[in-house]
Length: 217
Image (cartoon, rainbow, N blue to C red; front, side, top):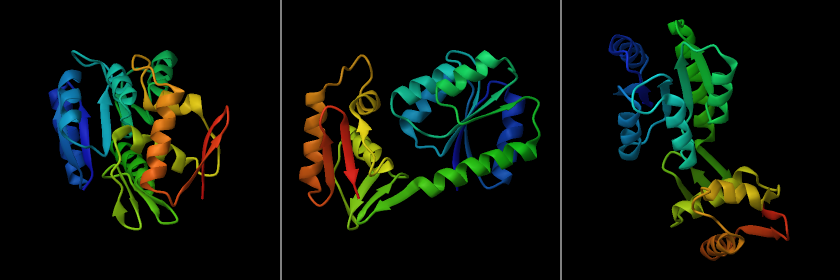
């Protein structure tokens, strides 16, 4: 059963959406404002975020930006009455996967949610040889044995696996692993790469000098 976080301050609409989604086999956790939604993301893992834009405390776009900045890649759909291009552009730049404008057709909403969940599910477990990413539980396994990785080590290995046989630029890795306030460095990155090599000596991570790193499958 897919678990959805619904951010919606219109309680009548929220009840309608909860009934609709539960009728279609989904579990729904409702938050009436952005702060409540953010708090719930710290305590629970969701399969999809369904976010209204204009809500109290933290608006939906700002909320998603905060989540993406903290490396939360949970798929997100905005529910909004906005049709202005700047709002749509800002939402996509903050990491939205889709938009649906109010009033919306319920069948269309279910189709969009189902399509996005199906796409993500295909990506949940991906393997390169004996190395497998279990995205649902945010972990890697080698030969069915879990690798004990820190959060940043997991993020780094995930990035390399998703771009296997291609060079991942250092700038892209640094932007993924560290926020601007944290200030990642080439030296810190080398430590994480070497740590992964030590934990899984069977995989081949190449240092493309001056450019980045490449996982060779």
